[in-house]
Image 1 (spheres, rainbow, N blue to C red):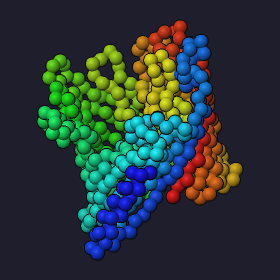
Image 2 (image 1 turned 120 degrees about the vertical axis):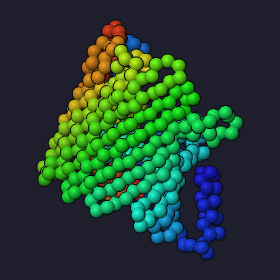
Image 3 (image 1 turned 90 degrees about the horizontal axis):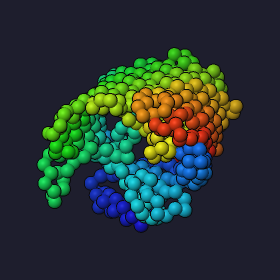
Amino acid sequence: MRKLLVALLALGLVFAFTAPAFAVDADFSGYYRLRGFWYDNEAAADDKMNQPLSRNRAYYDQRLRIQMVFNVAEGLSVTSRFHAMDRVWGDWERINVSSGTQGYAQDNIYWHRAYITAKTDIGKFDVGYQQGGVWGTIFGDTEADGRARVKYTGVFGPWIALALWEKFNEKDGDPSTSHVDEDYDAYAVAGIYKWDGGQAGLLFYYLINKEDENQKTTNWIPVPYFKATFGPLYLEGEFIYYGGKTDVDVGKDYDWKGKAWYLYGKFNMGPAYVGAQYAFREGDDPKTRDIELGYPGSDYNPCVLLWNDNTTGLGYVTGYQTGTGIANGSLAQIFAGFSPMEKLNLHASLTYAWADYTARRVDEDMGWEFDLEATYKIFDNLEYWIGFGYFKTGDWFQGGDSANKVDDAWLIMHKLQMNF
């Protein structure tokens, strides 16, 4: 808290001394979130395998997010955002969930965004650490805490044009090292067309990675998407191709050529709805030197347990076998929901997942998951959500040895969130 007070005092002094030059309006927004988790058998292992995560585990965590927008003049603003007390309740020595650093809960303040927004006659410019990793649908997204970038946005009737330069890593900034021009940059251009009831867009990402002085990697990532409503039917989809090449000083060069795609449909019937979705992310073929991995993303959370970035993954053979984002596999899901009253929504889904490449695996069957969820709006700004996920573990989790015994897993998770 002391760090927060010092930072706010410093900001206040800056604007106080510059008050004669301009007037500043400040807007504050954010949320407070409290979550509870009750896991059974995260390891997806039979008790006889004596895996630590095959036992029950229950805990709470929380996060306070505050975003501040200082409107300096018409069309000119400064935005900053931080997380505070991003912690597991009662565990003072756990890492900061946001920044990944060790520390005490009372010192847990993580600033991750600070940028200027300037709206001009030719478009809007955002300069500084800002939101990144978000495009089209939620599939493939990983919202960054803050990415150093210069971004242009232009609106021309139904068209939106985007262009940006982004700095992932820079080693030249360290004067104590001999690094010369070892960095990682990204460039992107994109266009979006909107019409009544839908939109479609195409993003082209170009990455140049020279972090390793002994090799250079260039990647190009085209990402088309669409969203459309046809009466009671809503459809969206996204395709991601991850191409590129790595040139190495010693050894053989190799290519990147991964794919991922997603389709989602929902049919509304008054207070009820039904729908289905399919998602795929290619895995790396171990028989080739090339890299076939599809572009990663962790914000897409199709299930309560499987491939959900609110959880820590499933599996036990060599650590977690599935992570926070879909990888090396496909899922097919059917779902339905119903709102018996204005403030309450009930949701159920059934998902089947199977692997892409199964080298050194017993089987491609990852398993089935059945989820039940309920969301209740206590106030306009206060919402309670609870979900139950039951995962029927498939033989893929045995790894390459059929002697490994698997068992089912489940999770009860609930969340209280107040937005302001």
